[in-house]
Amino acid sequence: MRLIFAGTPEVAVPALNAIEASGHDLLAVVTRPDARVGRGRKTSRSPVAAWADDRNVEVLTPAKPREPEFLDRLRELAPDCVPVVAYGALVPTSALEIPAHGWVNLHFSLLPAWRGAAPVQHAVWHGDEITGACVFQLEKGLDTGPVYGSVTEPIGPSDTAGDLLGRLADSGAGLLVTVLDAIGAGAARAVPQPEDGISLAPKITVEDAQVRWSEPAFAVDRKIRAVTPAPGAWTLRDGQRVKLGPVRPDPDGPALAPGEVAVARGSVHVGTATMPVRLGEVQPPGKKPMPADAWLRGNPFSAGERFQ
Image 1 (cartoon, rainbow, N blue to C red):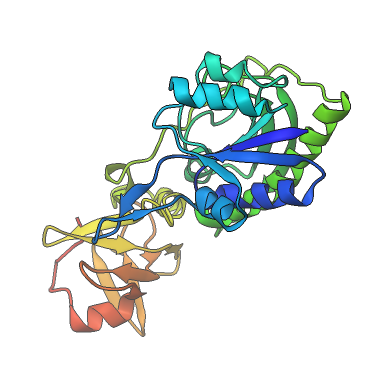
Image 2: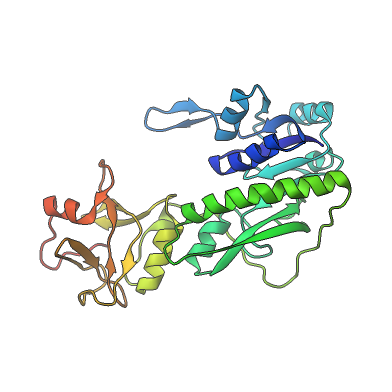
């Protein structure tokens, strides 16, 4: 089939690689416009745009996919289908109707669970044991379209959102090509999503990622893993944010009040509402990540001091 691919971040690249290796014809990619990033605010291409640049594939970067110029170019290219992975913009009906087989989206959950922008993060945060990826027909509603197929993936007790998303990006890429093959052969069948089991996965903000030491250890552990690597967990010390890597609940650790810190034999524990957790890496303001005990050797806590 003649395809145009829509996607933006690094997690979309495995699907692009799989499409490149398939028998389909990639006409162009659609991605978000170049953005200013970092302290220097340098203009940066999206990973999908960079991938296409390296292969001399046409790159379309509409500010909004309802722009007349973009819709006209889409009609000129006349794709049979538009596969989507984490594009990052709402696609209007006027664009959805142009390809003969519409737009098909690779989503990193088992729909109708975790519809929205952050399905993997919410699956980790809420303690799901199994998640997956599915390919569905994009329509006007939020991740509501019928599903062509899915793959499952267990969530391990130490998995971060980044770990899990990496595995799903790889397995989902194969699923996407399988679905595209079936659509091209006229053998695909999309099944409507069930009306029960719906859950929503809105974007997780930096404010959401603050650790609440008054919560049980299992909740602290899940939240930190869910927001690793982005937006990144953090806590406060003396009013300054300290970023935290994954922790480990420790039933044999010292008895501590929520937020209270104890250092012993190279380990750093912080109290929660239940058992303490053992810190891994921390990143103080303006510094690189480092082991928690190394940081505290140069920045010891005074008696009774706590993370906030």
